[in-house]
Amino acid sequence: MAGAAESGNDFGVSACLAVTDLPRAIASHDADDSVHAHAATLMAELLERGLRRLAVTFVNHAGSVLVKGVPLERLPQVARHGVGFSPVADAFGATGLIDPQQSLARPDGDLRLRPDLTALGPLDPASGWAWAPGVRHERNGDVYSLDQRGFCARQQTALLAAGLSAQVGFEIEWMVGLPEPDGEWIPAVVGGPYSADRLVQGLDYLTAVAEALDAAELPWLQLHPEYGAGQFELSLAAAEPLRAADRLVAARLVIQQVSRRFGWICSFAPLVTAELVGNGGHLHLSVAEHGVALLGGGAGPAGLTPKGEALLAGLLEHLPALMPLACALAVSYRRLAPGRWAAPFRVWGVENREAALRLVPAAGGESAHLELKVADLSANPYLLVGAVLAAVQEGLRCPRCLPPPLTGDPATASPAEAPRLPQTLTEAVLAFAASPLLREAMGEGLQRTVAEARQAEVRRSDALTDADLIASTRAWPFATGPA
Ligand code: GLU
Ligand code: MG
Image (cartoon, rainbow, N blue to C red; front, side, top):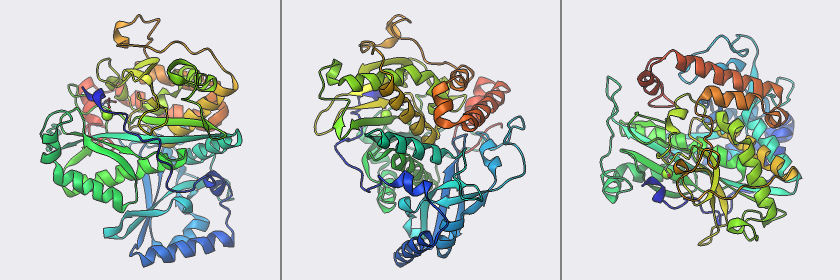
């Protein structure tokens, strides 16, 4: 079934950009003349290429991509001073509504969203749009302590300082549907699971997606029909962690834009209908210490090195606490049923597609890596990647014994051998909020306000029937159903 696909990320491919200095570039993104001059040079290059407008994005606590658009001529000023964004944006819920019980649900304050110039590039050259991920700063120039990308950058910096490096790649699964007035879900492309029929039925669409990805300079490895009706999958090339999260954000915008051109709704929702399989947002990760890979070439199970075992044990330990970051919507937990290849078990396995952590041994030019298969696309990728890096570092600092890999279907193993991960968002938030590791890594304010956002999502879902809950985020990130 769906898991028959190969891993989808070529970890032999190195990052296209030298972004080792990226977190430092963010941290010291001071309002000095050199930023202005650098931005002016980049602006001239982009104008020369026909780009005219800039979208600067960030991803809020609920996982929505928020944006400010500016004329490209304003880049030097915007790079230096940012554009205003209210802190209330992190209190926007899954459907855009603000639950007043959150501490960020207040009208005052302002932050300055500054584009990261090291990540600036085209988004849709045909319409003249460039794009850059942004980081929100206080007016005094400090990085806002609740900024998700700032958190991810700090974790990447800490990783590098410890002599470690990581490569991350995301797989995006999505479905395309016809715009039905009553919200019914009708797949926009026919054809069976993974079938070439669906490839040719949707050939114009997939060609347009591929061309748009190329135009946005987003390197990709695989693009094909997935298992579910009207479902497709894209594997992005691996990159440094922050860059990988950036690419996920941009690639989803590209897919949305192309789908819109075809008159279709594209959904990244964890679950589109109760009957269909869900959409995952799997995270692939490889880690090296001083350039030596930790997940392969060792004498441990499946070639793990002792440090590879330790980091895997650390991830397993912290997995329940990571869940509200990997699966942020209430409906995410409806996807996490056994047999849907969504990997809802707190186990690791070698090429086991029902294990939350799937080890993919080195093969065919790919280095060994891990797949966090349980994650879906409601995740804020910056929070998820930052937290995963924190868990990896903790696992290496405090090595634990790694249980044996789970072979076969975890659903047929005993609960002691194959425990389930949290089965509701409520359960997951308790683990998240109680995690000393995440408090330390994220800071008290970020951890608390993300927990508040998840509790708001729990309250939203508690007011809905199961069917209405699925309908309400059916076309995530667009709200189509009852709020
Ligand atoms: N669609 C499955 C999910 O929800 C994953 C299928 C696969 O790639 O194995 O994560
Ligand atoms: Mg897949």
